[in-house]
Image 1 (tube, helix red, strand yellow):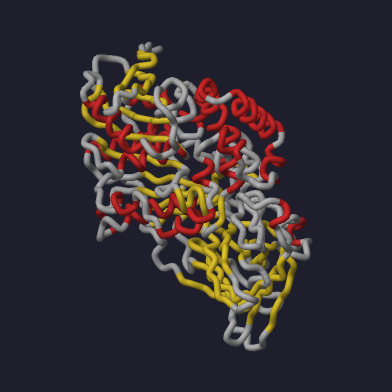
Image 2: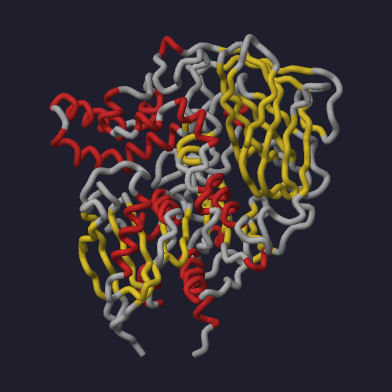
Length: 581
C-alpha cells in the first residue's frame, strides 16, 4: 500500500541576530502539526546546494523528515542569502546561539536542536557548542576540527597552502568578491576579478606564485592576510581556542572523520577532548567513527585503491539520526564507543575506548638506510640538498588536492616518483615475519642539522609490499630554526593512521624538506615564506644523523591483539529490518 506524505518548505525565512543583521534559512517540516526536534545546519556554501548540505554531510533529508525531524539550513553571515560581512569563524558562535534562541521560540520546534555538517559547517557546530547554549542537545561534526589555527590553517609551523588557496578559489572567493565588488575601487575590482579567473583556470600556477601573498590576493580574500602569516603559524600550536570550553561541557558529540582527510588530526583532538570529560568508558555518550575518507571524497575509492563496499559514508545518515534519537532521549548509544577502518585488511573494527586499550609503543631506529628494532651504535649521517625552487611534490596523504569535487591526489598513493628523487631519503625495515597492526599516532624523532636559518623536515610512513611497491600512509611536517649547522633534535608529529602491515611487507620512512603544494615552501633564508620573492629562496644542505647519542627513530603505536571486526556503518535497511511489522 502506497503512503502519501506532505512535507512543507518555508523558503528564505529571516532570522535576526543580536546586532540586527538578518540571516536567512530554508526550513523543511515533516507531515503533521508538530512540534518537532530540529536538525540545524549553518553553511557558508549556499543552503540550496545538496552536495554540501546532504552528500558531504552524510545526511538524507527525506530520511530525517520521515523520522520526524524538522530541518533548518541557514546561510551564514555574509554568504549568499544572508546579510552582513563574512569573516571566517568570527561570528559563528554568537550567530549560532542567536539562531538557536530564535528556533526555540517557534511553534514548530519542541525545544530540542541538534546540529550536523562537515568541514566549515562542522566548525560552526563546534563554535556554537563552546557557547553552551540552552536547547542544544547534541552535535555531529564531520571532517572538521575544534581549532582553526593549528590543525586547520597550520601544521607545526607550516601553512596548509594547498587547502587554503583552493578553499579561496573554489568556495569562498567567488561569492565573497561578488558581494564586495561594488565597494572596491575600479582598479582593485578589476585586479581581483582577473586574479580569481587565472586561479580558477590554473590552480597549480596559483600555488607557484611568488610571493604567495600580495595585494591581489588580499583584494580577493581579505582574511588571507591573517592566514598567510608566519608568526601566526608559529604561535598556533599553543592556542587552545575553543578546546578549554568544550572540555567542561556535557554535550554529546558524534565525531566522524577520515584517515585521509586533512582535518583528521583536529577531529581526533576534538574527540579526545570530549572523551576526557568522563571518568569511566561506560558513562561516555560520545562516539568516534574514523573511516578511510578524504575531504570531499566520502566514497569507497581512496587514493589508488578500491577499499570495498563498506568503506563509504553511505550509512552515516542512519548513524547520525540514531545518535540524535539517543541524545534526545537521554540514553547512551548502543554502538561501540569507537569504530575505525583499517587499511591493509580493509576492515572495520569496534573498540571500547580511545586511545585504543592495550596499545603498545614500538620504536624503530634509523640506520644509514634501514629501520631496526635495536638501537644503532655506529654514527652515520645522510646529506641532501633542499631546493625550494624544486620542491618535493605532494603525492597522496591527508590533503585537499586537486580540489573538493575530486580529492584525486589524496589518500594512499604510489611513491615511486617521489622516492626516485635525490632529496628524499628512505629507510626501510626488513620484511615482516608476521602481520603487524599500526593504529594510532605516528611520530619521528630526528637528529638534524642544516646550513639554512630555517628549514622543514617532512616525514611519511609508507607500506612496501613484496614487489617493492611503496604506498604512502600518513605524513607530517616540522618547521625548525637552525644556527650554523648545529646538531638539533626535532620531533615530527607524522599523524594518526590505521594499517595492517602483512607478513612479507616492509615499513618505510621517507624524510625530505618539502611537500608542495600541500605545505608552503620554506625559503630557507629566514624570510617570511608567504611574502618571500624569487630572489629570497636559497638551497640548503640538510643532514640527518643517527647512532650513539644522536639516535633518530620512528615511533609507532601497535595493536598486539586486533579488535573485533564489525560491519561498519549502519544503513536505514538495517534499522527497518529490525523494526516490528
